[in-house]
Length: 184
Image (tube, rainbow, N blue to C red; front, side, top):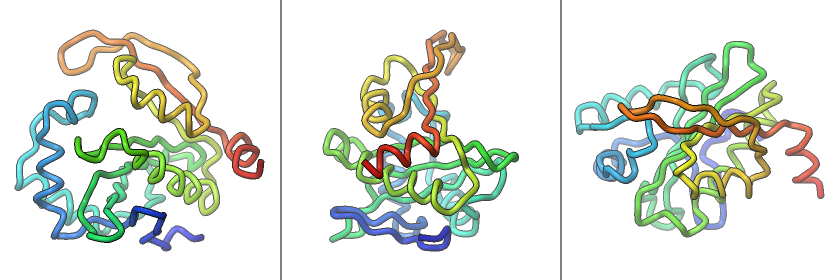
């Protein structure tokens, strides 16, 4: 698998670049207050979504310090279900990952099914040695997913987020640990 091998198909999903037809579904889940609760955005309008989709169509997966969002779509309908974001740090060795799903796509194993091949893409086609993820401790679903994917919690810090104090957990998955888990 190489970096240019999007789309990637799984049993139920197609992981691909964003398309113009994703606009309505993208705005729907990004505007949902429960979806946005633990994300960096609060309000998201159609104009911002349109610009975002256009920009993401040309971003490279390994562009240093630039977020690359992979659309998660239903394999049979191509309907957008969510997205996985990747940001490879300037050193090329550490990447950050995040994921967002529409409410109707949550609690169905879709995030797990989507993130696994993204991790494979990072570890098999880039120099990334470690993938990190940060989540609010109140986001227990995200913490469970990261643990299930093989990530280890490495620290908890108090943070100020969206005007309130919270505790954030940072998780990491190292290439060697990923290899052991996927070879076993």
